[in-house]
Amino acid sequence: MVPAVNSRNEKIVDLFRAEALLRDIPAADVERWLELTRPCALLTQNGAGPVVGAVRGPVLLPDDVPDPGLPLIVTVDCAALPAGVTDLPLPPDGQLLLFGWPEEDGWGEVRYVPAGVPTRERPRYPENFPPEEPEYAEVYAELPPSDLRLTADVSLPYMGPVPGHHHAEELTSVWRKVLGSEADGIFAHHGSRTPMLLGGFGTEDNGADPVQAVLRFVEEMEGVEDEENTADWLLLGEFHGGRQGGATIFWMIRRADLATHRFENARVLVDWNP
Image (cartoon, rainbow, N blue to C red; front, side, top):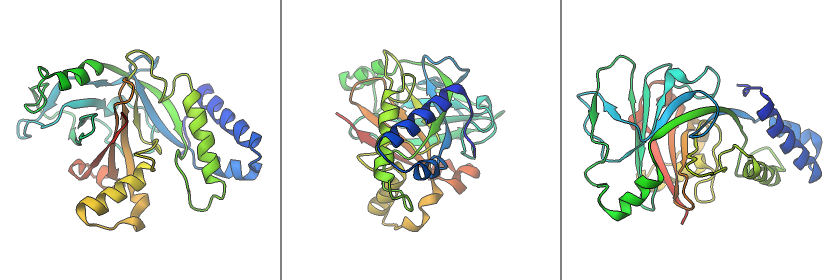
């Protein structure tokens, strides 16, 4: 899928191309690498785009769904996302609820509520995460409830190697430099800015590509070797709290499970960054 063409994304791609050529990477290899570019949605608290979700909004679930055991981190209004803003087979409407905890022993899950399904509001604070406790209160304070606004973004591999690309390590290094300097990008933490990525390649989980990390997780925790199906796994979402350090939460899912709304099969990784 071709990413959204706008002046912002054109500038990012031009910066990447210029930096790669400065490093004497052959132009043909740079252009072949740029064919990997994927569209993704960057959601931030202080962006200029339309509201498409919220940080720590109300927990609205159908009656037959049990109360979640983890705090709600982000709600995404699928109908508010423009067509093609990601290459994910997301539901066309309804609410996507991403739960988790951005700390060392964090975990997470995904719930999907189709449009028109009756819901009732659940406790904002799960029993095991009471806001009265200082260790939880600190995290809640750093993730204040707020709207999330959309920026149509672009994504390239952030970690190498990438099969078939001899300059992958250096090209991913260029991409990390470009993202790190982007004024409204995923790493531009200013005040209460809380970035969320939907789709794309993502950044890194403990020094590894998120897809490779989830494969390692599935093998180690579930005893299933799945390296042949690397392409089946997608980054559904990646959340960076506005705090310094803290943790990054990755919600991962297979393409077939996402397309058929089997969100119970999602896997969640937390990269602790003290």
